[in-house]
Length: 603
Image (cartoon, rainbow, N blue to C red; front, top):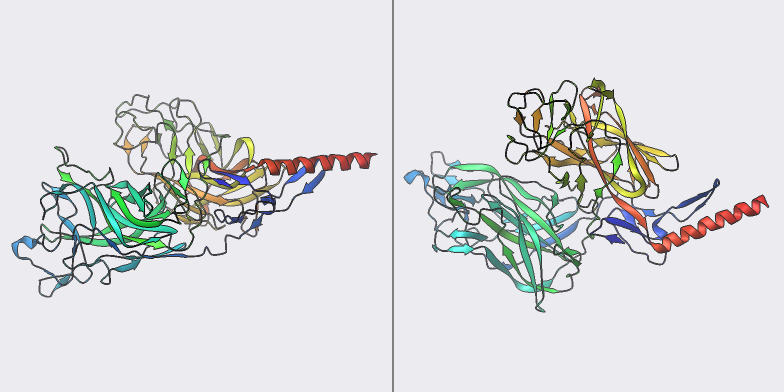
């Protein structure tokens, strides 16, 4: 079984056949190919049934749910013509802005085909679909979510949650609002379409059922011009961009802009977390959803920020077929073998224009004097730096049906503590080698691994080789993504391993003059050990005890496979495969049988 909280994969004995597609594995037949070695004699138990990664994940459909309770019209319909008179002002009888307060920009959305009364008529680009219907873009290979906007013409078409006054009523819409189903029904899952204005983030949503019970979880309503896609809320609900690069228009002066996005959050009602426990609510009749404004959307204007933000819910769709249960999380794997200290701790006192001593931290790569630093280092930009605890949750989700939430643990930042594995053929202070090995403190079995890495002087598709070394002396080599730390790389390696941005904008510091610079990214690569490719064949390595990983310096595919300046490995996480007691008993019997066979042979 999968423990969602611990992120550990438990092997299931033959008598408990439990279909589980979370890792592309069918658990059953003891879910193990355990080989007990006793003086060269081995006994093989049945191997796990593995579904190849090449097999497409079934697309699960969700359809619009009819709702009431929308409280604001914030979409300009295309039957309205924007006038250049009066500075391009659009009255609030046509559309009410998402933001409010003093000196606000008064932005609203608009329908595709909206025109300005110039000669010839000037169209606004990238409006919302004229039919009001579209298919969500988040996790589109796994989910086929159809969303339906409300009518754009003189109709409330958004549930706006804000603590500042509505332009028409003069009173706030409030930080809480409810959408009620026209017809109560039970669902296997829900998809919520939402966005934030002037900030955003996760907000609370309570599902209310006909039997009087309810459950509270969270949804994403990121700021419409910032945020990340294909990741998880704090309660473990996957979300991503449902629709991107659409436009907005200012009701103050009719100026337009584009590049906005809305979030699509998937709630699996058969495996729903309230932040503490996981429950199955798929058999209950849903009557309404009560939303809370996301705390990050500036709920109340103040002297330093006079503009009030909002959370905005546009639509909800429902799944009437089962969604795969949440994948197990990947948690940090303890390893040794890091060879360089390249993080300036926040206890260090930065000297303006001064060089950082090598006893504090060394540059990350030969020829590049930049290195990393800890959050809170005096003089650093707001929000920059690596987390003080060294721990963070990756922003990369990959395929939500296969990959769970990943937590990475960076090494200690204390001076003279090696905290990165630097790979470069050129010498960098005390060492120079294009390969390096990280050794597990304790050999363990894993169903999946996550590698945190990046390269310097590289491309957005740079990748390296990694060899997984097992306790029985065997190994397998595959590849991992290691794009340049300023390239926003994502995609699939030649061997088919997904990679993407795990952490962004943590910044760097120049060791020669202590200048800070923003940006910088680290990338996560996902290795599915149940179906891992070595470039030629696929194999199942979930039953092997992993003892170490040997990495090679990354290359630039578009530059005659030339080596990058340097590659940096920051951490490893994984989902551990742990035998249940019944499986351990089988292994013990197998070991005893092997020993008895040896004794008989000697006799």
